[in-house]
Image (tube, rainbow, N blue to C red; front, side, top):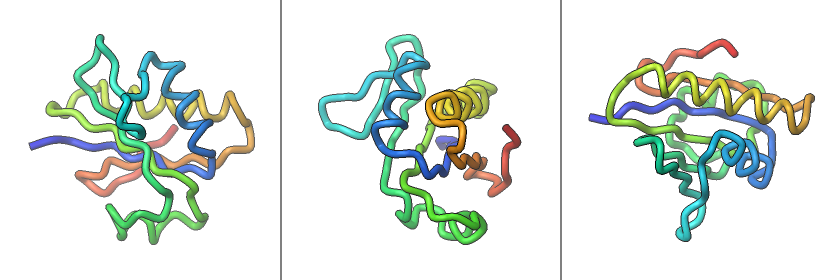
Length: 112
């Protein structure tokens, strides 16, 4: 079973890609999928209102432009650390960016 952390943000797709590249992840030729040779995590950037986790989407209080799904086989600290680093990278690109992170498995919010 895999584990997922989801970042909801009003950042653009280009800003999300830039934030992920800052953490060493590169976009695949398929588009929207980011990987790194030094990590087993896979990252998917999808449309903000996609209903992957509708119960979380209903809690947001803002309309996200994108969702960033960070997926791994193991539920280790890498998932949360990468999610928090990505949130900081997004805020570094645009300080007014709204970012909320959730543990999609437990349906709980992660403070950043």
